[in-house]
Image (cartoon, rainbow, N blue to C red; front, side, top):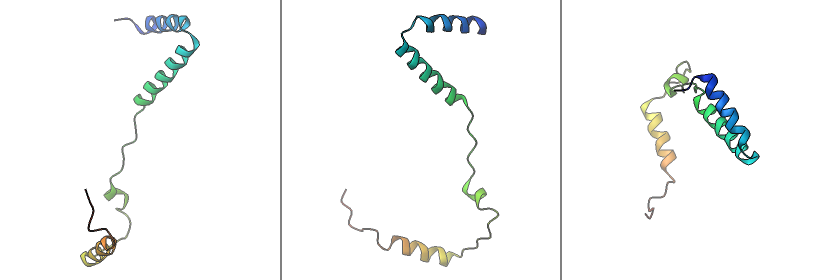
Amino acid sequence: MQTLPKIEETLIAVIKTLPIEKQQALLEFAEFLQAKTIPKNPSKRIKGLWANADINLTEEELAATRKEMWANFPKDIEI
């Protein structure tokens, strides 16, 4: 396997031989690869987002809200 400086030298030499359109495509691909390697922040769980909120819903309140939400949902959907 090539060492890092040797890989860089080889890449630069190859890039210089490519037409400008190919260099642009290579740049876009390199940026794509770079974006893939940036670690993403782990998403927070919904429970964690609302953990400190003082929300206390009863089962009856949840049932009433569900009933209201689904009241106008079409019953005769054709598949």
